[in-house]
Amino acid sequence: RIIQQTVEKIQQVEGKTTIQTVIVKEEDLVVDAIAKNKLAVFTISKEVLDTEGKTIEVSAGRGFAVSTDGVVVADGLLVASPDTYYLKNSSGKFKAEHLSVTEDRIQVSFLKIGAPLDEKNKVVFTVPVFGDLDKMKIGQKIIVLGSTISSFIFEGNGNMDVNVTKSNAGGLILNLDGEVLGIALSGDNTSFASIKNITDALKP
Image (cartoon, rainbow, N blue to C red):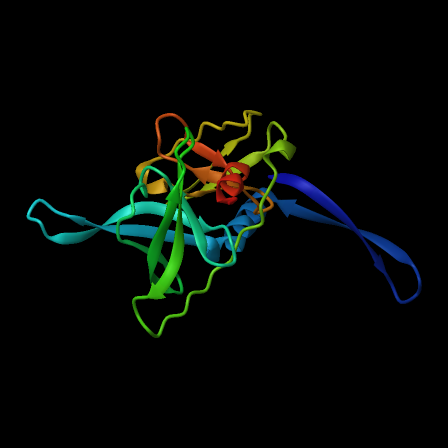
């Protein structure tokens, strides 16, 4: 399915100009958007006590880097209290410091990437390009990059109703340019926090 065309002018040696139409398919845009953000995404786990009083590690959703100094945003319900957390991506597994959780209706948490569990590992991550939800047009496609990948059509509601399973909580909400529009949340009140909500909460 063709959704976009770009036109490029190519100057030939003879001085003549030809016009080449480059066709971009939707599936290519989705693949590129995911690839751009692969290193920004972390899976989150935390230590809890089981029924026998033993310490075990359980999933706390996902998150993604929002600053170059290693701050990661996460679902505020799953990462609510200052427990022992770990962050993992393709570069390794790392301890995480719980920084804060917002107390308003839209709950997000912030973790800071810490020391690696394996001394040989060095954290490698990228910070997504922040998009502008106000510039989205009705009918444009939005990608949810969680433990699974899904998509839906933007209907013009700034408080998007995203179908979020617990495993997808903390997933990136992207446009087809690979820009992050927000984070998927597992709460009953809202399933979405915009990147503006996130950056505002980061401000001192």
